[in-house]
Length: 353
Image (cartoon, helix red, strand yellow):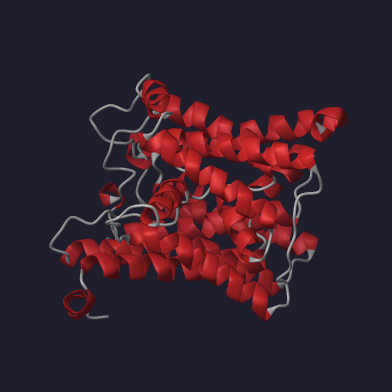
């Protein structure tokens, strides 16, 4: 691809948005067909079951690791240039924000990425929850909740003005990330064999991880030739959801990768659902589920912004480059989600409230 010619033709902002759209399309199709969802995987894990949802999540995560760390080992990609690595990370934000996000995704019955995919198939519950998520995320970024987020995030941060790269911090060679990705992939494939998961679903699960690597590759390539600074990033839904919301509310909106990503995921998931006959309007089952979903979406909006990313942004995109706070946030999401699911299972009256 001749990026210079593309930049001369449509300009840098539109090119970045186009790359976000392409990444989102791949992600949306793959996530819809694979049923990729961290919330579902956590629920299985909390019940002591390692079945198809856990296998799909592990395969997605390992695919992202293999592609990104493979490029790192070959010298084709430098994770230190990624946006999440180029700024100070917050340990306190990752712990508290990740836990809040984990609680929220159980209550809302889906993480932010999954809600976007479901919304594209006609799920009105996800539409409402997704809008609440985006609004609270924007409030946490630059609105009423921003001072609270800042105070928590500043409590404990990484040193040196940058996030922590776990591989050199632990004294591990760069190739160890690729090895870990391959090992996790083997575990995922063994679980898939035991659960007899079809080859197409496995391919689409890998496609979600590939979308993360694709986003990094496209933004990295653009950063090398663009005149203005370009953030090297990939799939994430906390900041982009807020940015996309403001894009339609501001008089002079700014195009970028994030603004292209969210519509791309929606369109990709819509096309996948339409082609397979899975478009159907669904709503809330009653006031109690609606209340829980709204509370969960709000917790995810604040928690995701505090943690520096959502289940995709911190969990997969940040985890794939071994950003220290991303791995902490991902762990906190698993813990928060597991505890919440176990509490709701043990107390049916709480689940119905």
